[in-house]
Image (cartoon, rainbow, N blue to C red; front, side, top):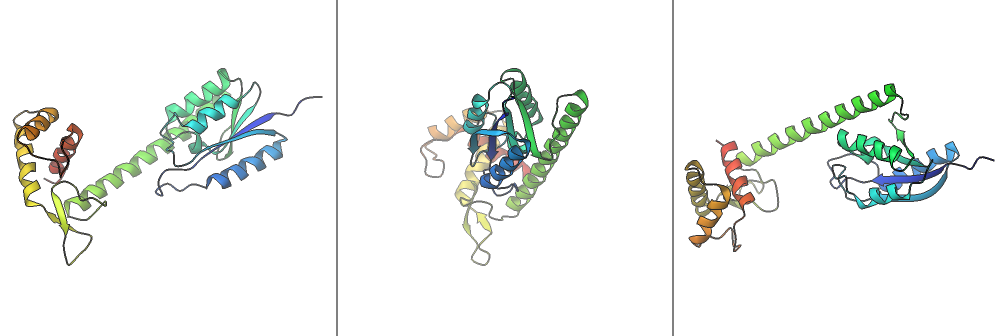
Length: 232
């Protein structure tokens, strides 16, 4: 008598509310129904809460891989729960097939199977999905930069160079004269050819603090320069 196929369930929930996805519990229930319909025996359930699909080293995902045995199946609700990058997606498919001698099945919107036509369709769908996410991220970034340039508050802490909220509109910011002077000096040093790390050292040598902190960091300098150029 043939032994039933063993199934491992994996679910992931995105770290922000910007991405629409089912809860981990909903994903697991859908995967269970899929397994039961196929006659699989569920051997384990793994998940990653508040983890980005761009991260290939998620603890729950790695544990799910290690739980696979020869001939078993890894079930995910949707392909983007497994990976959000086409390169990671195909690496996972290859590892599951070659390293663990198992396979991946997707409950919704997946193209299962390893013949060349199905692989091609899966890769094309993954490429389009990745492109669409990048386009949305680029549009969101540009919108945020426009809002920042107009003085609109975008985070709990105002960006460097801005401070108090206007009394009339609580969502707007006004220039911080002292920080604007420091930004002007940073831009002058940058235009003179100084790198971000050298600018940090120059500021610290003059006793200029970064908004109360003892140290400047080169990434902070790069962010200030990038924002200033965007607002030009």
